[in-house]
Length: 395
Image (cartoon, rainbow, N blue to C red; front, side):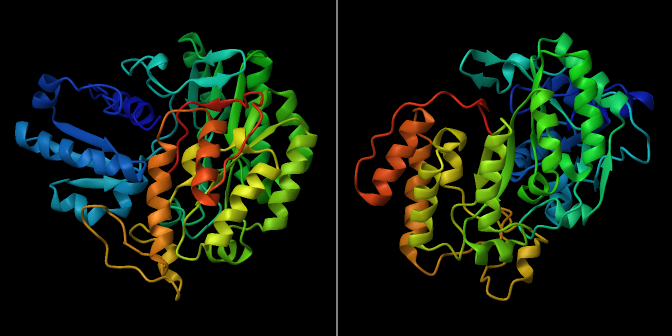
């Protein structure tokens, strides 16, 4: 999406555009040598670190080209990118220049991207943005320093046109990449009802905050009836003190209510967590595992979520917290480093990160994590597969 949307805008202004998804393909080096402008999409932390050698490489093979970087992490790391020779840094001006249907031709085919895994098999997935930005200001979120509570919707006809071209390319499922699909609940309803009318067999998923699922519970039957298979929600922690520090807008009790509410409405909940923070205790982590097991969410949680560590980026609102002790921004990692006051918690996080990367089903990996933490085996009965994307994204 971050390539297809600006490509369409540039073409409308008369540019000849070539797109290369460096997560999936090698670029055409002849095109890079001839380019007047090379623009890098930096939507995530990992993408930014991977882009650095490419930025240096383009400068080397085409020193006359102007370099640009855009996306959340471009703006968060503007000074560092300028030190690499990047001339322009900013957001894609979707609102100022108007909306056009993203340019999908020229990108790798959908079968090169993460499929949807279901009990019936794999489905190709379309990625669509119905809005960008976010109304909320959660302290740990990289969207906040850039958008600061602002969000804009994409016209329904543009969203549907983008869905249509990806379905023609083979997609059977749509993932809405909006930071929060219910930032504009009326707009979200119009989008999915139009999608379901035109493509009744196509399913979808979206990301929605716990507080929005509770506030707009009257819309949950609509999600189910229009083909929503699951909702990703950033729960982050089961500790109310940590949730307050992160300014998440929900409590531990809200999460438990949300689990029951989603089940009652027939839509799977896929919670995400920041398992390790400076305030996470061993007892707190053990409780997280016990809760996931007790609520029968083992198949709903991507294994990486059991090992993620809090990222403190440049300009993060986390830096407002008086009890957060971090080092200066590291130019290599693009993060403010922090260490837990208990070194064993950092060691546990490192061990688990390796463990969750090993092959296995979600149930098998959870059992390995359980054994590492509790030093006892866990015999879990196989469960029906909860639909999920084979490559779950996270910041």
